[in-house]
Image (cartoon, rainbow, N blue to C red; front, side, top):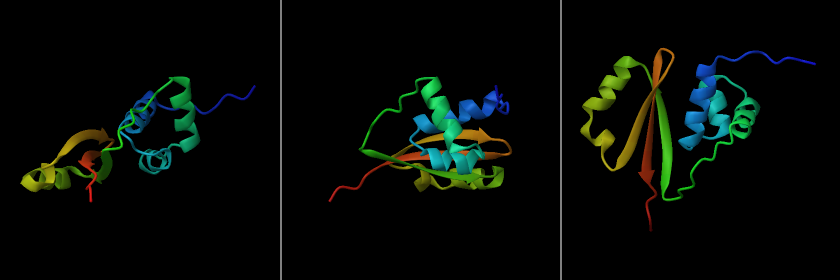
Length: 103
């Protein structure tokens, strides 16, 4: 029986957090460098259900420490949205939820 490559639980947790935040499987793959198929398998294994909320659209940026500090200096960066910051190794991911603009 083939045993898969062991993955640090840190990446499993980060991948599942990002999935719950609304980041797509392919985007998680690009961000963390972990196969989207692995992420899909973890979602199934741990029975993770991402809440459906079509009124908000998550966007994200990956920033270094200096860029993160500059982000917080801009008062408008945090207006009209929810924001979450999570650490990704030596960088930080800022996830924002902004309401869809209605016509």
